Length: 296
Image (cartoon, rainbow, N blue to C red; front, side, top):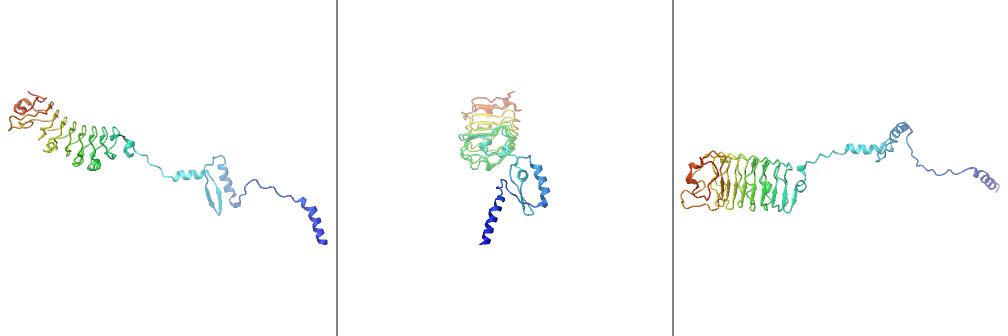
């Protein structure tokens, strides 16, 4: 009992002297004193920098939160994206696609773009296309008009246009062609002006089966003779400024049929060729109008 009273007196006089410490308003971080100097230096260098991210650094079991360096590290590690060329963009971003027509004019493309399904009209004028392959139109049988005017086309695979059974108009003007490809059967207009085509670059029956062909333009080439087997459907034939030196009685007419007349032929231009048309009076007996060219 005596001991209990002593303890009560001790508790009464001495406990008021002991005050509880106020709660700490700041978070406490424990660290290795051996690295204090290093960390002070790091935080001193970064105290004025904006804190954009958090970097966790392990060193002897200690974690240091250091933010700005993480962003720099991520920027350095991120692979640099290679610049996207215009020619690598999807066709309808690089070109204009509208109601079955694709307009790829003056876009500097070097090959035929991948066309949307059911494309009916392709205008790819004034680009840098060098070659036309069979695969370019293998899945687009709906094409009706193609215009490649003003490119650098030197080669066309024979099957490139052969299966385009609906194609009616084809322009390959102002290119670098040495020969003609196989042409589709329903073609009505074909333009190959301003190329380098020679007579040996046109097959003997190149136009024979084109029973719908009405307009044939082969001006400003290197032809030595008028193409053979021109179809009866032909209305306009331009052969000016070639190297044609002679013609024969059956070039335009049928020599063994005196009553044969080319009713549809409206215009033949042969001006700018070395041939003197006046030397071949029987060559034009079947025509309604005489060709334009040198007669004397």
